[in-house]
Length: 581
Image (cartoon, rainbow, N blue to C red; front, side):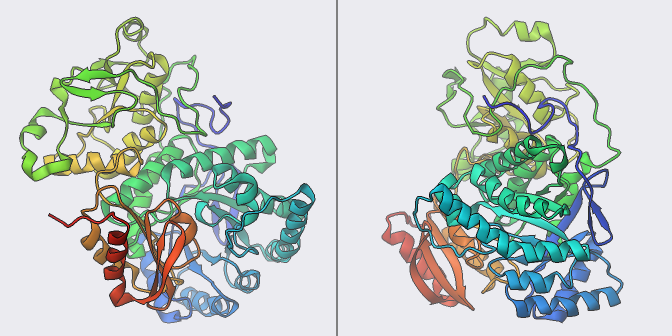
């Protein structure tokens, strides 16, 4: 078990205290609220479209707006966008998103309040080259980073610009991949390489992020980042931006974002966030505020955990499922190697037709599963389980602890042979909408290896509750019941209508249980983020699509109107296609 350094306690909430970073007229970190941001999808050269979209985001309450600046020419147009927005009375900070082009970053820094740098591709072109670097060769690479990055740091320091060092799981440099692998450790080191250069120049207006489409990787990377920052020293207390990249659209994307972002917010990590959706950016704002609301300054958090806390029940930096013994629960096998089971109240189960629900039928009724209900802070109730044979255990309703912390405590104090039934609510009306509550309260625990069954009660409609239960299992990556999509949220780099394409692909392939398809607007994060996808649909040129198997391109420059049919043929040729019923 790794030493716990990413938060003071797994069982009670306290927000990580960071230094304040100024982004234009907006403060990040410190005692400031958790800030909500989004990103424009309009082409950066289209000033009118960008201004219109940004004003709509401002009207929706968005606090920070990001735009892509893929070349120096695009970056130069940020001057006009910023001028038009200020003339319209919009003072929201603007952030330029930079990949591959240091010269674009230098130009953009003239006009916006913050620069987002991706350490994986700021000076590195992705080649997927396998190479063993000697220590001296690696140091030569770091010197190359230092020379290329220093001018931007000095300019931002002189002109009061902030900077986000945003590592992405899908776009780590070959240098990092060859030494650290495609790992959370590699993501963290990728950002720290650049941070060390900034600190050598006495520049500290830094924000960090560690994004991935894999929620477990995302959670582990952020925790490891905070741990490493703490180990570096007290003055490495930089703010953190949270996000699950390529989350997709609809309920699935909201659950996935809630699982990753909510898990970290519960640990006190996060000073700004974005819920990335393959939808109109204005729809990202509301779920962002919803997730942040329970953790904003001024919200009271009762100290309801025990004064003497048990050891951490899981390794925060490496996923491992809790090893519960195999048990039979009303005819259903449950335990470590068994699928996480879906439980609904008896009335909900009785209202559903198994023939209609098919693979989404709940497997157990709560009233019939015989779960032992305990308050994990009650020594007598916990002691009764010490010598008891393996059984199903849950937290009793009415326990006045946040749901994730209550089940973490339960997992810590009962023997590991017992299986755990997770709940999305402990009886009280949840503060969040049903999908968000399921992600935060159930999905986050599944990502930590806790939970052998899930009970959904926050959604009153039986069919929706059943689908929600399976959706949260899929979002946490513990049980696939349908096609899995990795879908980017679109931006000015997107080379085709990704929302329309996503709808067509989902309609055509939504019946392929267990197949994972990536739908990516461009190559910035595409090949890396979809490395564990079975098939990829990636913008290669305007309205032209490249098809991938894993991260290997196999077909190029397909007209968009033909690309979905060609994707189906590719899936068929690899033996993964079945006809829809």
